[in-house]
Image (cartoon, rainbow, N blue to C red; front, top):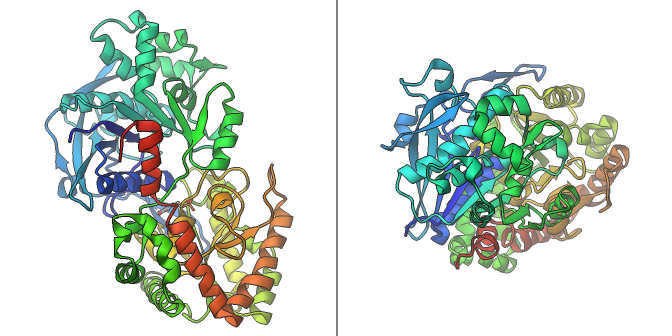
Length: 562
Ligand SMILES: *Cc1c(COP(=O)(O)O)cnc(C)c1O
Protein backbone atom coordinates (compact mmCIF):
# COMPACT_ATOMS: atom_id res chain seq x y z
CA UNK A 1 0.00 0.00 0.00
CA UNK A 2 1.50 3.34 -1.00
CA UNK A 3 1.94 5.83 1.83
CA UNK A 4 -0.84 8.40 2.09
CA UNK A 5 0.45 10.26 5.15
CA UNK A 6 3.94 11.75 5.52
CA UNK A 7 4.89 12.47 9.13
CA UNK A 8 7.61 15.10 9.60
CA UNK A 9 9.41 15.54 12.89
CA UNK A 10 12.65 17.27 13.90
CA UNK A 11 13.37 14.29 16.15
CA UNK A 12 12.28 10.67 16.07
CA UNK A 13 13.25 8.09 18.73
CA UNK A 14 12.98 4.69 17.10
CA UNK A 15 15.64 2.57 18.68
CA UNK A 16 18.15 2.93 21.53
CA UNK A 17 20.93 2.57 18.92
CA UNK A 18 19.78 5.69 17.02
CA UNK A 19 20.59 8.78 19.14
CA UNK A 20 18.37 11.03 17.02
CA UNK A 21 16.12 12.47 19.72
CA UNK A 22 16.30 14.64 22.82
CA UNK A 23 13.12 13.87 24.74
CA UNK A 24 9.36 13.50 24.75
CA UNK A 25 8.72 14.99 21.30
CA UNK A 26 11.00 12.45 19.63
CA UNK A 27 9.71 9.54 21.70
CA UNK A 28 6.15 10.48 20.75
CA UNK A 29 7.15 10.56 17.07
CA UNK A 30 8.75 7.11 17.37
CA UNK A 31 5.78 5.66 19.24
CA UNK A 32 3.43 7.14 16.62
CA UNK A 33 5.25 5.52 13.71
CA UNK A 34 5.55 2.18 15.55
CA UNK A 35 1.79 2.20 16.05
CA UNK A 36 1.22 3.20 12.41
CA UNK A 37 3.09 0.06 11.40
CA UNK A 38 1.00 -2.05 13.82
CA UNK A 39 -2.27 -0.58 12.55
CA UNK A 40 -1.26 -0.98 8.90
CA UNK A 41 -1.59 2.77 8.31
CA UNK A 42 0.01 3.88 5.03
CA UNK A 43 2.52 6.27 6.56
CA UNK A 44 6.11 7.37 5.99
CA UNK A 45 8.32 9.29 8.44
CA UNK A 46 10.86 12.05 7.71
CA UNK A 47 13.52 13.47 10.04
CA UNK A 48 17.21 14.45 10.10
CA UNK A 49 20.14 12.08 10.59
CA UNK A 50 22.20 13.74 13.39
CA UNK A 51 25.54 12.04 12.93
CA UNK A 52 26.72 13.38 16.28
CA UNK A 53 23.45 12.55 18.01
CA UNK A 54 21.99 14.81 20.70
CA UNK A 55 24.77 14.33 23.25
CA UNK A 56 26.00 11.89 25.86
CA UNK A 57 25.64 13.28 29.36
CA UNK A 58 28.44 13.04 31.89
CA UNK A 59 27.92 14.35 35.44
CA UNK A 60 30.71 15.11 37.88
CA UNK A 61 30.42 14.69 41.65
CA UNK A 62 28.65 18.03 42.02
CA UNK A 63 26.17 17.34 39.23
CA UNK A 64 27.80 19.62 36.66
CA UNK A 65 26.91 18.36 33.24
CA UNK A 66 29.42 17.75 30.50
CA UNK A 67 28.28 16.98 26.95
CA UNK A 68 30.12 14.46 24.85
CA UNK A 69 29.29 13.77 21.21
CA UNK A 70 27.28 10.62 20.70
CA UNK A 71 29.02 9.42 17.57
CA UNK A 72 27.37 6.51 15.83
CA UNK A 73 27.66 4.89 12.43
CA UNK A 74 24.53 5.31 10.30
CA UNK A 75 26.14 2.99 7.74
CA UNK A 76 25.85 0.10 10.24
CA UNK A 77 22.19 0.60 11.04
CA UNK A 78 20.44 2.33 8.14
CA UNK A 79 20.13 1.72 4.42
CA UNK A 80 21.23 4.51 2.07
CA UNK A 81 18.72 5.32 -0.67
CA UNK A 82 19.64 6.44 -4.17
CA UNK A 83 17.97 9.71 -5.03
CA UNK A 84 19.59 12.93 -3.95
CA UNK A 85 17.88 16.30 -4.04
CA UNK A 86 19.07 19.88 -3.70
CA UNK A 87 17.72 22.64 -1.51
CA UNK A 88 18.66 26.26 -1.83
CA UNK A 89 20.13 27.65 1.39
CA UNK A 90 21.61 31.17 1.56
CA UNK A 91 21.78 31.13 -2.23
CA UNK A 92 23.75 27.87 -2.35
CA UNK A 93 22.48 24.59 -3.72
CA UNK A 94 22.92 22.10 -0.90
CA UNK A 95 22.78 18.42 -1.76
CA UNK A 96 20.64 16.20 0.49
CA UNK A 97 20.53 12.43 0.62
CA UNK A 98 18.64 10.03 2.88
CA UNK A 99 18.97 6.83 4.88
CA UNK A 100 16.08 4.48 5.51
CA UNK A 101 14.94 2.58 8.60
CA UNK A 102 12.01 0.24 8.24
CA UNK A 103 9.52 -0.38 11.02
CA UNK A 104 7.71 -3.65 10.72
CA UNK A 105 4.35 -3.74 12.46
CA UNK A 106 2.78 -6.59 14.33
CA UNK A 107 0.96 -7.80 11.19
CA UNK A 108 3.96 -7.29 8.89
CA UNK A 109 3.07 -3.83 7.54
CA UNK A 110 6.12 -1.66 6.90
CA UNK A 111 6.50 2.03 7.69
CA UNK A 112 9.69 3.50 6.22
CA UNK A 113 11.45 6.38 7.98
CA UNK A 114 13.90 8.62 6.10
CA UNK A 115 16.80 10.34 7.82
CA UNK A 116 18.03 13.31 5.76
CA UNK A 117 21.77 13.87 5.54
CA UNK A 118 23.85 16.70 4.03
CA UNK A 119 27.25 15.16 4.78
CA UNK A 120 28.20 14.76 1.12
CA UNK A 121 31.58 15.54 -0.44
CA UNK A 122 29.99 17.89 -2.96
CA UNK A 123 28.77 20.21 -0.17
CA UNK A 124 31.02 22.87 1.39
CA UNK A 125 32.21 22.09 4.94
CA UNK A 126 29.61 24.19 6.80
CA UNK A 127 26.71 22.63 4.89
CA UNK A 128 28.08 19.13 5.49
CA UNK A 129 27.66 19.72 9.24
CA UNK A 130 24.01 20.80 8.94
CA UNK A 131 22.56 17.44 9.89
CA UNK A 132 25.11 16.74 12.67
CA UNK A 133 23.50 17.86 15.90
CA UNK A 134 19.95 18.06 17.18
CA UNK A 135 19.06 21.46 18.69
CA UNK A 136 22.72 22.48 18.46
CA UNK A 137 24.12 25.68 17.01
CA UNK A 138 22.51 29.09 16.68
CA UNK A 139 19.37 30.44 14.96
CA UNK A 140 21.03 30.33 11.58
CA UNK A 141 22.00 26.67 11.98
CA UNK A 142 18.49 25.79 13.16
CA UNK A 143 16.74 27.58 10.31
CA UNK A 144 19.03 25.92 7.76
CA UNK A 145 18.18 22.56 9.35
CA UNK A 146 14.50 23.36 9.04
CA UNK A 147 15.00 24.06 5.33
CA UNK A 148 16.60 20.63 4.96
CA UNK A 149 13.77 18.98 6.89
CA UNK A 150 10.78 20.77 5.35
CA UNK A 151 11.89 21.51 1.80
CA UNK A 152 14.45 18.69 1.48
CA UNK A 153 11.92 16.23 2.91
CA UNK A 154 9.16 17.06 0.44
CA UNK A 155 11.59 16.90 -2.48
CA UNK A 156 13.08 13.65 -1.33
CA UNK A 157 9.70 11.95 -1.02
CA UNK A 158 8.93 13.08 -4.57
CA UNK A 159 12.29 11.83 -5.83
CA UNK A 160 11.61 8.47 -4.18
CA UNK A 161 8.40 8.26 -6.19
CA UNK A 162 5.89 8.66 -3.36
CA UNK A 163 3.11 10.10 -5.48
CA UNK A 164 0.07 9.17 -3.39
CA UNK A 165 0.71 11.26 -0.28
CA UNK A 166 -2.47 13.12 0.61
CA UNK A 167 -1.55 14.42 4.06
CA UNK A 168 1.60 16.05 5.39
CA UNK A 169 1.59 15.91 9.17
CA UNK A 170 3.84 18.48 10.86
CA UNK A 171 4.78 17.23 14.33
CA UNK A 172 5.55 20.65 15.90
CA UNK A 173 6.49 23.77 13.93
CA UNK A 174 10.04 22.78 12.90
CA UNK A 175 8.70 21.22 9.68
CA UNK A 176 6.59 24.24 8.68
CA UNK A 177 8.74 25.07 5.65
CA UNK A 178 7.34 22.00 3.94
CA UNK A 179 4.42 24.28 3.11
CA UNK A 180 6.65 26.33 0.81
CA UNK A 181 7.94 23.21 -0.92
CA UNK A 182 4.38 21.95 -1.50
CA UNK A 183 3.29 25.22 -3.08
CA UNK A 184 6.41 25.24 -5.27
CA UNK A 185 5.73 21.66 -6.29
CA UNK A 186 2.17 22.54 -7.31
CA UNK A 187 3.39 25.55 -9.29
CA UNK A 188 5.68 23.24 -11.26
CA UNK A 189 8.31 25.78 -12.16
CA UNK A 190 6.17 28.93 -12.09
CA UNK A 191 7.43 31.51 -9.59
CA UNK A 192 5.97 31.60 -6.07
CA UNK A 193 4.58 35.04 -6.89
CA UNK A 194 2.16 33.29 -9.28
CA UNK A 195 0.50 31.39 -6.41
CA UNK A 196 -3.26 31.95 -6.24
CA UNK A 197 -5.88 31.50 -3.57
CA UNK A 198 -6.61 28.06 -5.10
CA UNK A 199 -3.00 27.05 -4.57
CA UNK A 200 -3.17 28.03 -0.91
CA UNK A 201 -6.48 26.20 -0.45
CA UNK A 202 -4.93 23.11 -2.02
CA UNK A 203 -1.99 23.41 0.38
CA UNK A 204 -4.33 23.58 3.38
CA UNK A 205 -6.19 20.48 2.28
CA UNK A 206 -2.91 18.57 2.42
CA UNK A 207 -1.44 19.75 5.72
CA UNK A 208 -2.18 19.06 9.34
CA UNK A 209 -0.30 20.45 12.33
CA UNK A 210 0.18 19.27 15.90
CA UNK A 211 1.39 21.90 18.36
CA UNK A 212 3.18 20.83 21.55
CA UNK A 213 4.03 24.10 23.21
CA UNK A 214 1.63 25.82 25.60
CA UNK A 215 3.77 28.93 26.13
CA UNK A 216 4.42 31.56 23.44
CA UNK A 217 8.15 31.73 24.26
CA UNK A 218 8.51 28.06 23.37
CA UNK A 219 7.66 28.58 19.70
CA UNK A 220 10.40 28.53 17.14
CA UNK A 221 10.88 31.95 15.52
CA UNK A 222 13.52 33.69 13.42
CA UNK A 223 14.40 37.33 12.72
CA UNK A 224 13.25 38.61 9.34
CA UNK A 225 16.81 39.38 8.11
CA UNK A 226 17.91 35.84 8.86
CA UNK A 227 14.86 34.36 7.12
CA UNK A 228 15.51 36.53 4.06
CA UNK A 229 19.15 35.52 3.95
CA UNK A 230 18.57 31.78 4.41
CA UNK A 231 15.39 31.40 2.33
CA UNK A 232 16.23 33.85 -0.43
CA UNK A 233 14.24 36.77 -1.88
CA UNK A 234 11.46 34.84 -3.66
CA UNK A 235 10.44 32.78 -0.65
CA UNK A 236 10.71 35.57 1.86
CA UNK A 237 8.67 37.84 -0.44
CA UNK A 238 6.00 35.12 -0.64
CA UNK A 239 5.95 34.83 3.16
CA UNK A 240 5.72 38.60 3.38
CA UNK A 241 2.76 38.71 0.99
CA UNK A 242 1.05 35.99 2.99
CA UNK A 243 1.50 38.11 6.14
CA UNK A 244 3.72 35.57 7.87
CA UNK A 245 6.13 38.04 9.48
CA UNK A 246 4.98 39.49 12.79
CA UNK A 247 7.00 42.10 14.67
CA UNK A 248 9.92 41.33 12.41
CA UNK A 249 9.83 37.61 13.15
CA UNK A 250 8.97 34.50 11.19
CA UNK A 251 7.11 32.27 13.63
CA UNK A 252 7.07 28.62 12.60
CA UNK A 253 3.98 27.72 14.64
CA UNK A 254 2.14 30.53 12.94
CA UNK A 255 3.34 29.38 9.53
CA UNK A 256 2.31 25.78 10.22
CA UNK A 257 -1.12 26.80 11.52
CA UNK A 258 -1.74 28.98 8.51
CA UNK A 259 -0.87 26.13 6.14
CA UNK A 260 -3.10 23.52 7.81
CA UNK A 261 -6.76 22.55 7.70
CA UNK A 262 -6.52 20.53 10.89
CA UNK A 263 -4.68 21.83 13.96
CA UNK A 264 -4.50 20.11 17.29
CA UNK A 265 -3.04 20.24 20.76
CA UNK A 266 -1.83 17.09 22.53
CA UNK A 267 -4.27 16.96 25.45
CA UNK A 268 -7.70 18.40 26.24
CA UNK A 269 -6.29 21.09 28.54
CA UNK A 270 -3.56 21.93 26.03
CA UNK A 271 -6.24 22.27 23.32
CA UNK A 272 -8.04 24.86 25.46
CA UNK A 273 -4.83 26.78 26.10
CA UNK A 274 -3.92 26.70 22.41
CA UNK A 275 -7.33 28.06 21.45
CA UNK A 276 -6.58 30.97 23.77
CA UNK A 277 -3.21 31.51 22.04
CA UNK A 278 -4.61 31.22 18.49
CA UNK A 279 -8.17 32.52 18.79
CA UNK A 280 -8.70 32.82 15.04
CA UNK A 281 -8.10 29.16 14.29
CA UNK A 282 -10.09 26.01 15.09
CA UNK A 283 -7.67 24.19 17.37
CA UNK A 284 -8.75 20.64 18.25
CA UNK A 285 -7.17 18.19 20.68
CA UNK A 286 -6.01 14.59 20.42
CA UNK A 287 -4.37 13.39 23.59
CA UNK A 288 -0.95 11.78 23.26
CA UNK A 289 -0.17 8.18 24.00
CA UNK A 290 2.77 5.79 24.14
CA UNK A 291 3.48 2.58 22.22
CA UNK A 292 2.17 0.02 24.68
CA UNK A 293 4.37 -2.89 23.63
CA UNK A 294 7.59 -0.86 23.58
CA UNK A 295 6.93 0.59 27.05
CA UNK A 296 5.68 -2.49 28.85
CA UNK A 297 8.50 -4.19 30.77
CA UNK A 298 9.19 -7.90 30.14
CA UNK A 299 7.49 -9.18 33.32
CA UNK A 300 4.28 -7.22 32.63
CA UNK A 301 4.33 -8.18 28.95
CA UNK A 302 4.51 -11.84 30.02
CA UNK A 303 1.68 -11.29 32.49
CA UNK A 304 -0.54 -9.63 29.86
CA UNK A 305 0.32 -12.33 27.32
CA UNK A 306 -0.97 -14.90 29.80
CA UNK A 307 -4.18 -13.17 30.80
CA UNK A 308 -5.13 -10.90 27.89
CA UNK A 309 -3.13 -12.10 24.87
CA UNK A 310 -4.97 -9.72 22.50
CA UNK A 311 -3.37 -6.70 24.21
CA UNK A 312 -0.48 -6.44 21.72
CA UNK A 313 -2.75 -6.23 18.68
CA UNK A 314 -5.44 -4.18 20.39
CA UNK A 315 -4.37 -2.16 23.42
CA UNK A 316 -8.00 -1.65 24.52
CA UNK A 317 -7.87 -5.15 25.98
CA UNK A 318 -5.64 -3.76 28.72
CA UNK A 319 -8.94 -2.70 30.29
CA UNK A 320 -9.24 -6.34 31.40
CA UNK A 321 -6.17 -6.02 33.60
CA UNK A 322 -8.80 -5.44 36.32
CA UNK A 323 -9.23 -9.22 36.39
CA UNK A 324 -5.58 -10.02 37.13
CA UNK A 325 -4.81 -11.21 40.67
CA UNK A 326 -3.04 -8.61 42.80
CA UNK A 327 -0.37 -11.12 43.77
CA UNK A 328 0.59 -11.56 40.14
CA UNK A 329 0.76 -7.80 39.63
CA UNK A 330 2.97 -7.49 42.71
CA UNK A 331 5.23 -10.31 41.51
CA UNK A 332 5.67 -8.75 38.04
CA UNK A 333 6.46 -5.39 39.62
CA UNK A 334 9.04 -6.96 41.91
CA UNK A 335 10.86 -8.31 38.83
CA UNK A 336 10.79 -4.89 37.12
CA UNK A 337 12.02 -3.22 40.31
CA UNK A 338 14.87 -5.71 40.70
CA UNK A 339 15.89 -5.07 37.08
CA UNK A 340 16.02 -1.31 37.71
CA UNK A 341 18.04 -1.75 40.89
CA UNK A 342 20.49 -4.00 39.03
CA UNK A 343 20.77 -1.50 36.15
CA UNK A 344 21.54 1.29 38.64
CA UNK A 345 24.07 -0.85 40.50
CA UNK A 346 25.90 -1.60 37.25
CA UNK A 347 25.98 1.96 35.98
CA UNK A 348 26.11 4.10 39.09
CA UNK A 349 27.56 1.69 41.62
CA UNK A 350 24.72 2.47 44.04
CA UNK A 351 22.78 -0.34 45.68
CA UNK A 352 19.16 0.53 46.34
CA UNK A 353 16.98 -1.56 48.64
CA UNK A 354 14.19 -3.47 46.84
CA UNK A 355 11.95 -3.34 49.90
CA UNK A 356 12.05 0.46 50.16
CA UNK A 357 9.39 2.73 48.62
CA UNK A 358 11.01 4.16 45.50
CA UNK A 359 10.06 7.43 43.83
CA UNK A 360 11.06 8.07 40.21
CA UNK A 361 11.54 11.40 38.45
CA UNK A 362 13.04 11.38 34.95
CA UNK A 363 12.59 13.60 31.92
CA UNK A 364 14.48 16.45 30.23
CA UNK A 365 16.01 18.59 32.97
CA UNK A 366 14.58 22.03 32.41
CA UNK A 367 13.19 24.80 34.57
CA UNK A 368 9.46 24.24 34.26
CA UNK A 369 9.69 20.51 35.04
CA UNK A 370 10.95 21.46 38.53
CA UNK A 371 12.86 18.37 39.66
CA UNK A 372 13.63 20.32 42.85
CA UNK A 373 10.01 20.60 44.05
CA UNK A 374 10.31 17.32 45.96
CA UNK A 375 13.45 18.74 47.60
CA UNK A 376 11.89 22.01 48.80
CA UNK A 377 11.98 20.97 52.47
CA UNK A 378 14.62 18.33 53.14
CA UNK A 379 13.78 18.12 56.86
CA UNK A 380 10.21 17.26 56.00
CA UNK A 381 11.30 14.56 53.57
CA UNK A 382 13.69 13.13 56.13
CA UNK A 383 10.99 13.14 58.76
CA UNK A 384 8.53 11.28 56.48
CA UNK A 385 11.19 8.66 55.84
CA UNK A 386 11.94 8.34 59.59
CA UNK A 387 8.40 8.32 60.93
CA UNK A 388 6.18 6.90 58.15
CA UNK A 389 8.45 4.60 56.18
CA UNK A 390 11.79 4.59 54.37
CA UNK A 391 12.09 6.34 50.99
CA UNK A 392 14.57 6.35 48.15
CA UNK A 393 14.52 8.48 44.99
CA UNK A 394 15.81 7.90 41.47
CA UNK A 395 16.35 10.90 39.22
CA UNK A 396 17.48 11.09 35.62
CA UNK A 397 17.47 13.61 32.78
CA UNK A 398 19.68 15.66 30.48
CA UNK A 399 19.69 19.45 30.35
CA UNK A 400 20.01 21.11 26.95
CA UNK A 401 23.61 22.45 26.83
CA UNK A 402 22.41 26.08 26.77
CA UNK A 403 19.66 25.65 29.37
CA UNK A 404 21.20 27.13 32.50
CA UNK A 405 18.07 26.52 34.61
CA UNK A 406 18.15 22.84 33.65
CA UNK A 407 21.87 22.52 34.42
CA UNK A 408 21.31 24.24 37.74
CA UNK A 409 18.40 21.92 38.57
CA UNK A 410 20.69 18.89 38.24
CA UNK A 411 23.27 20.44 40.58
CA UNK A 412 20.48 21.21 43.02
CA UNK A 413 19.47 17.53 43.11
CA UNK A 414 23.09 16.52 43.75
CA UNK A 415 23.36 19.00 46.59
CA UNK A 416 20.15 17.77 48.20
CA UNK A 417 21.31 14.17 47.76
CA UNK A 418 24.42 15.09 49.75
CA UNK A 419 22.33 16.60 52.54
CA UNK A 420 20.02 13.60 52.71
CA UNK A 421 22.76 10.96 52.54
CA UNK A 422 22.14 8.33 55.19
CA UNK A 423 18.45 9.11 55.55
CA UNK A 424 16.92 9.27 52.05
CA UNK A 425 19.14 7.77 49.35
CA UNK A 426 18.91 9.77 46.11
CA UNK A 427 20.60 8.59 42.95
CA UNK A 428 20.88 10.56 39.71
CA UNK A 429 21.18 8.17 36.77
CA UNK A 430 23.39 9.60 34.02
CA UNK A 431 22.43 9.92 30.38
CA UNK A 432 18.67 9.40 30.34
CA UNK A 433 17.63 7.72 27.10
CA UNK A 434 15.14 5.19 25.70
CA UNK A 435 16.94 2.31 27.38
CA UNK A 436 17.10 3.91 30.83
CA UNK A 437 13.55 5.20 30.49
CA UNK A 438 12.26 1.65 30.11
CA UNK A 439 13.89 0.60 33.37
CA UNK A 440 12.92 3.72 35.27
CA UNK A 441 9.28 4.02 34.28
CA UNK A 442 8.63 0.37 35.12
CA UNK A 443 10.88 -0.21 38.12
CA UNK A 444 9.93 2.50 40.63
CA UNK A 445 6.88 2.42 42.92
CA UNK A 446 5.65 5.95 42.22
CA UNK A 447 6.14 8.21 39.22
CA UNK A 448 6.48 11.84 40.24
CA UNK A 449 5.73 14.77 37.92
CA UNK A 450 5.89 18.37 39.10
CA UNK A 451 5.62 20.71 36.09
CA UNK A 452 4.78 24.35 36.50
CA UNK A 453 1.24 24.81 35.22
CA UNK A 454 0.27 25.21 32.40
CA UNK A 455 3.57 24.33 30.75
CA UNK A 456 3.19 20.57 30.39
CA UNK A 457 1.33 20.20 27.09
CA UNK A 458 0.89 16.48 27.66
CA UNK A 459 3.80 14.57 29.16
CA UNK A 460 4.05 10.90 28.33
CA UNK A 461 6.38 9.27 30.85
CA UNK A 462 3.52 8.82 33.35
CA UNK A 463 1.68 6.86 30.65
CA UNK A 464 4.66 4.51 30.34
CA UNK A 465 4.61 4.06 34.12
CA UNK A 466 0.86 3.33 34.09
CA UNK A 467 1.33 0.45 31.63
CA UNK A 468 3.64 -1.11 34.21
CA UNK A 469 1.28 -0.61 37.12
CA UNK A 470 3.26 2.37 38.45
CA UNK A 471 0.85 5.07 39.66
CA UNK A 472 1.60 8.77 39.27
CA UNK A 473 1.74 11.55 41.81
CA UNK A 474 1.50 14.66 39.69
CA UNK A 475 0.52 18.27 39.32
CA UNK A 476 -2.82 18.44 37.47
CA UNK A 477 -1.43 19.53 34.14
CA UNK A 478 -1.11 17.93 30.70
CA UNK A 479 -2.40 14.38 30.39
CA UNK A 480 -2.84 13.99 34.16
CA UNK A 481 -5.89 16.29 34.08
CA UNK A 482 -7.50 13.42 32.13
CA UNK A 483 -5.72 10.38 33.54
CA UNK A 484 -6.07 11.23 37.21
CA UNK A 485 -8.75 9.65 39.39
CA UNK A 486 -7.76 10.44 42.95
CA UNK A 487 -6.78 7.36 44.89
CA UNK A 488 -7.74 5.14 41.94
CA UNK A 489 -5.12 5.71 39.20
CA UNK A 490 -2.75 7.73 41.38
CA UNK A 491 -2.77 11.04 43.21
CA UNK A 492 -2.75 14.76 42.48
CA UNK A 493 -0.51 17.48 43.82
CA UNK A 494 -2.67 20.50 44.57
CA UNK A 495 -5.98 21.16 42.86
CA UNK A 496 -7.14 21.67 39.32
CA UNK A 497 -7.04 25.43 39.06
CA UNK A 498 -6.29 27.87 36.31
CA UNK A 499 -3.08 29.82 36.24
CA UNK A 500 0.30 29.00 37.68
CA UNK A 501 0.29 27.26 41.06
CA UNK A 502 1.98 28.58 44.19
CA UNK A 503 5.17 26.50 44.54
CA UNK A 504 5.07 26.55 48.35
CA UNK A 505 1.49 25.29 48.41
CA UNK A 506 2.31 22.67 45.78
CA UNK A 507 5.29 21.42 47.78
CA UNK A 508 3.12 21.27 50.91
CA UNK A 509 0.50 19.24 49.04
CA UNK A 510 3.19 16.90 47.68
CA UNK A 511 4.53 16.17 51.19
CA UNK A 512 1.04 15.83 52.59
CA UNK A 513 0.07 13.20 49.99
CA UNK A 514 3.26 11.25 50.60
CA UNK A 515 3.02 11.46 54.37
CA UNK A 516 -0.69 10.84 54.95
CA UNK A 517 -1.80 8.81 51.96
CA UNK A 518 0.77 7.14 49.74
CA UNK A 519 3.61 5.98 51.97
CA UNK A 520 1.23 4.69 54.71
CA UNK A 521 -0.71 2.79 52.05
CA UNK A 522 2.43 1.30 50.51
CA UNK A 523 3.71 -0.06 53.82
CA UNK A 524 0.48 -0.53 55.75
CA UNK A 525 -2.12 -1.58 53.19
CA UNK A 526 -0.23 -3.24 50.35
CA UNK A 527 -3.40 -4.66 48.85
CA UNK A 528 -4.92 -1.19 48.53
CA UNK A 529 -1.73 -0.02 46.83
CA UNK A 530 -1.92 -2.96 44.40
CA UNK A 531 -5.51 -2.03 43.56
CA UNK A 532 -4.21 1.38 42.46
CA UNK A 533 -1.52 -0.33 40.37
CA UNK A 534 -4.16 -2.43 38.62
CA UNK A 535 -6.39 0.58 37.93
CA UNK A 536 -3.47 2.52 36.48
CA UNK A 537 -3.07 -0.24 33.89
CA UNK A 538 -6.77 -0.82 33.24
CA UNK A 539 -7.89 2.81 33.00
CA UNK A 540 -4.80 4.54 31.71
CA UNK A 541 -2.79 1.85 29.90
CA UNK A 542 -5.84 0.98 27.82
CA UNK A 543 -6.41 4.58 26.71
CA UNK A 544 -3.15 6.59 26.79
CA UNK A 545 -1.46 4.65 24.03
CA UNK A 546 -0.49 5.66 20.47
CA UNK A 547 -2.80 3.03 19.00
CA UNK A 548 -5.87 4.88 20.28
CA UNK A 549 -4.20 8.21 19.48
CA UNK A 550 -3.43 7.27 15.88
CA UNK A 551 -6.93 5.91 15.32
CA UNK A 552 -8.15 9.35 16.37
CA UNK A 553 -5.75 11.05 13.95
CA UNK A 554 -6.85 8.69 11.17
CA UNK A 555 -10.52 9.37 11.79
CA UNK A 556 -10.39 13.09 12.56
CA UNK A 557 -7.41 14.40 10.62
CA UNK A 558 -6.19 11.97 7.95
CA UNK A 559 -9.60 10.82 6.73
CA UNK A 560 -8.47 7.20 6.64
CA UNK A 561 -10.36 4.19 7.97
CA UNK A 562 -8.41 1.97 10.31
C1 LIG B 1 9.16 9.42 27.62
C2 LIG B 1 10.48 10.10 27.58
C3 LIG B 1 10.55 11.48 27.80
C4 LIG B 1 9.32 12.33 28.10
O1 LIG B 1 9.12 12.44 29.49
P1 LIG B 1 8.02 13.47 30.05
O2 LIG B 1 7.93 13.19 31.49
O3 LIG B 1 6.76 13.15 29.31
O4 LIG B 1 8.53 14.81 29.75
C5 LIG B 1 11.79 12.09 27.74
N1 LIG B 1 12.91 11.38 27.49
C6 LIG B 1 12.87 10.05 27.28
C7 LIG B 1 14.14 9.32 27.01
C8 LIG B 1 11.66 9.36 27.33
O5 LIG B 1 11.62 8.04 27.11
